[in-house]
Image (cartoon, rainbow, N blue to C red):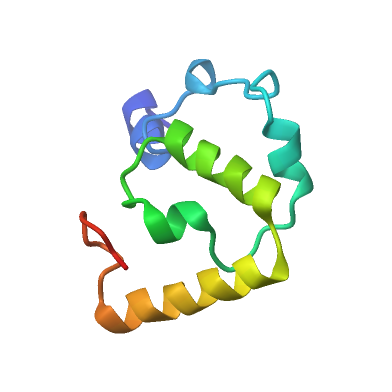
Length: 93
């Protein structure tokens, strides 16, 4: 397969573009948490927010996780969905 076709099919990533994130402080904590329905970054940040900022929100969630926080995030997710504001760049809630 031609390199240009392969690059386009894989979203432009090559093996040399893959970043080793095992050295990122706090990443092992993020891996230890079971993925859920939603999170702080999904509710409070725009979809095009930098990964570093999303990662900080994930660590904030890990430090403050509780059943009440999960219920709050789920309810806010429903509210955002009903308002149709997932793609909105401003304040969603």
